[in-house]
Length: 365
Image 1 (tube, helix red, strand yellow):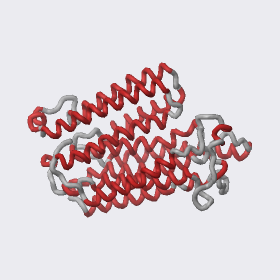
Image 2 (cartoon, one colour):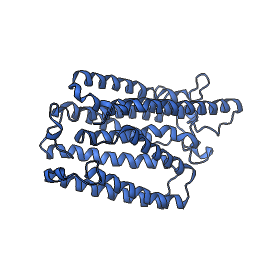
Image 3 (cartoon, rainbow, N blue to C red):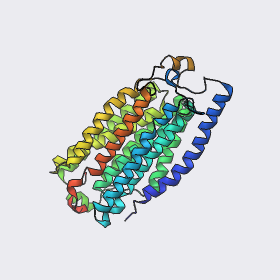
Image 4 (cartoon, rainbow, N blue to C red):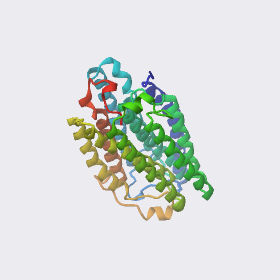
């Protein structure tokens, strides 16, 4: 049996060794900006850039504290639930929840670092832990039903590193050849992952699992696999044709939609398999949706655009929205931090009504 607590322990050194050079780089950008007066280096919302000390847009940095504070709160909640809410033999399964809390904290640290001097070359810092959070959320949902079929922590993080390399290549090598190769990589990865999912983490479903498979679960899984692969095929081909400038956001969007499809499937399959919803899980889910919708609206305001020239980017600058201090992108930070927090709470409580059930007594979807 794997020790899933390593998901949380392994993410800590990754965070430290990733964050330190990031912070050194962006603060070097800030010093260069202050010394040279070159306002084309950093893509600020100049109509709402409130300086403090050496920071030219302190409001854009400070608004990321929501991720950090809510990440710490989530770790506390997970600790309390692991200690008082479950039997000791189940504690190891909370490793992914701890990793999610740490990732939420690091999203605040790295997004704040990116906003010290936002530009094309350091945008990957703002999205890297979003990739990790989306992937860990999907893995945790899978683990709920397949408790010891999940890949070990080091294997998972190695593949996330490969994903980060692809993100960098998309930023610096956006040629037609790259996009054609990416189509085949994307489709191939989608097929492999759905095959592993259908076979419960194996290349071939174990015979005893095949014989005991619930027909409703098999039908549901088949529908999910078809939908997911059709989406990924469409997304890969569309990206090769359009070749979006913002490659990191494209990758994040693909990951989020895939994770969202699995989350939706999970929610649908619970009543299909005769399970009730946990009351608090339903509450947290609707709070999360209520925050995600306005968060997305504010995110789409487009106050700056580092994929264009500085002059064109300035055309999207707008006045402050809150207290003559925060702009629309700051509001996105606050709302998305809350949305992520309540999404994680939904994940933490989604199967509370199954407490005490053995691994062999629950439907494996």
